[in-house]
Length: 125
Image 1 (cartoon, helix red, strand yellow):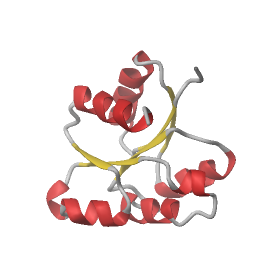
Image 2 (tube, helix red, strand yellow; image 1 turned 180 degrees about the vertical axis):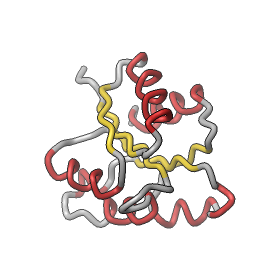
Image 3 (spheres, helix red, strand yellow; image 1 turned 90 degrees about the vertical axis):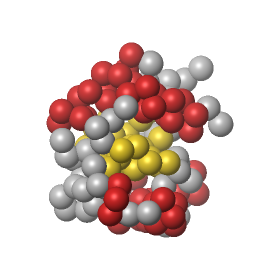
Image 4 (cartoon, helix red, strand yellow; image 1 turned 135 degrees about the horizontal axis):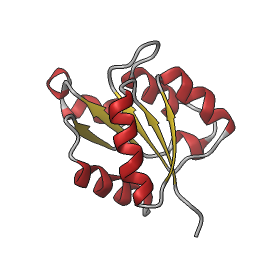
């Protein structure tokens, strides 16, 4: 069984490092970037099982990024599960997250059991 690869886009290194440790403990291979533009750049070259996307990031935020991912010509990449990570869930409705293209939403402060559960669910198709 090949290792599942998780791309974490999060400008907070604290959250990035915590999520990395938790998911590496679950045998995921983790790549971290700081903004949505870097997500699109790395997706051109590499494949991932799932993307964890912070909503509030510099350069390109999570909402814009997920729309760009969904619009990719490569269907395999356009259909990657994408999970929103947000500290301001109140700024968006669940409907808006779904419309933008997110499969699920995790609210900060992150519940790490829920993080693992969501990642497991979405990568175990």
